[in-house]
Length: 165
Image 1 (cartoon, helix red, strand yellow):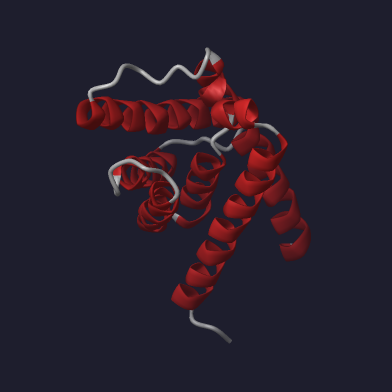
Image 2 (cartoon, helix red, strand yellow):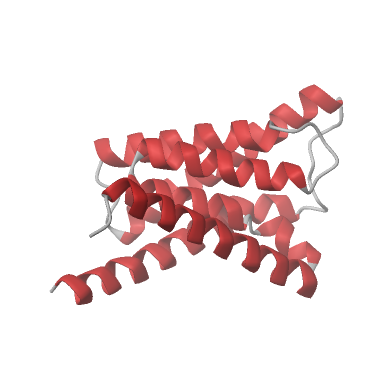
């Protein structure tokens, strides 16, 4: 029997690896779709919903540092945005009921918007550039994040219920 912290580390590593593989596959297929769907934000929000605020903050840091390691920008900007998003997602989801699909859709959309807004704000402050619209595809990012998180979390709950029950 593994200790629970070791299981959380293993789950976190596998989640990060899965996000990286999906991101790489989507980047190979089409870049504009990646502007509309932030796979790493989906991983951070899902992990924070399942494991809590501290695990969500650690996952946000890890995903952000992976993002920053492949960009040419300042190292740590996406990590800060991911850390705040993961922590707030875990904290708020423990305080209010977000389990129904409608609430999950709205909540994950707001958390995706928070992640993107923090990243865009930090990027514009440090680089002095305007808001990164991505040809308008960036406006779809909270919606795509919300739909992805809602569908994946519903699948996670079904698998967990089948395994436990």
